[in-house]
Length: 173
Image (cartoon, rainbow, N blue to C red; front, side, top):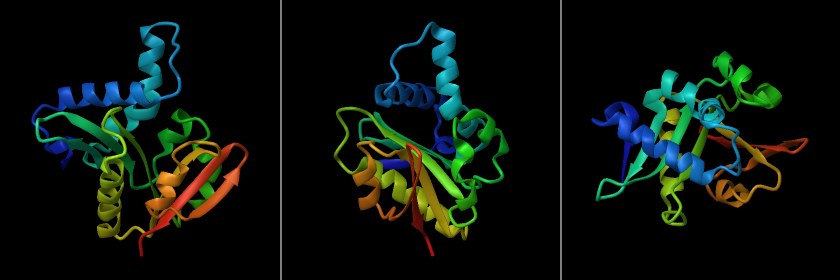
């Protein structure tokens, strides 16, 4: 398995098509009124990252060229002001952005899960953040989400709950 940045891929269009397929295979939302609503939902959760942080968008690529997972990252959560208007509840944990300035979203293609791909992507992004001198990174998930144990095993041990949301932070220095 190799990890490749979007900006280093020759066929970025195919990679983004794979991102879309993996995104919709991973989301719990399945009903959309029309194609425009579906596209807007994808744009809410991935659009800013593709447009503004393509070097922090990582793909896991199998030997046969299959894109098996992706990670969209943002190294400056506080400075990414358009995200607070795009992603619902983005600002709920803004008081923790100084200690954990980077955040990410990671998804792995069904059939490729439980093989360590998500962990590879998370650790690669964490390495980048550490190299850039960032003190930590975080994610936000639901308090009953099935992914909590995965993130805890990946070193996200600082937790804070607000309503139905759970902030998980990983210190890098």
